[in-house]
Image 1 (spheres, rainbow, N blue to C red):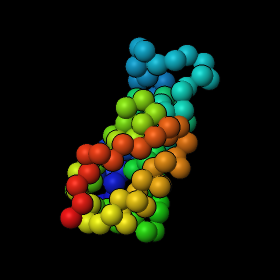
Image 2: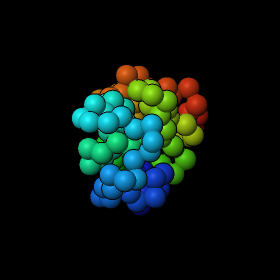
Image 3: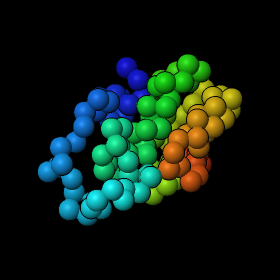
Image 4: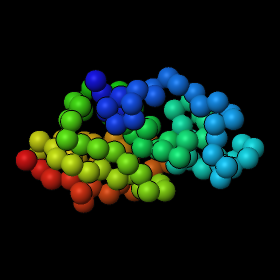
Length: 112
């Protein structure tokens, strides 16, 4: 199991139908970068899902079941516990490289 499956319930290849878009979703092609889902659709948690997928795709980041990914606007929020500072540095680097990420907040992560 990877980050995406564990945190978001396996919505890896699932495209949201147009009628399922929330009422506050932008119309037309103007989806904010932090709201773009895995398949280009509007997704309220799009950035967090894309970060989780980036973690899964990176060969140096193992799924640590005590690390969680969320978002507040364009800020990626990491919470939980990681095994080392090196792991946190790598996760922060990968998260900051995802399109739409304006910053990474790892203040809620404990090392050890």
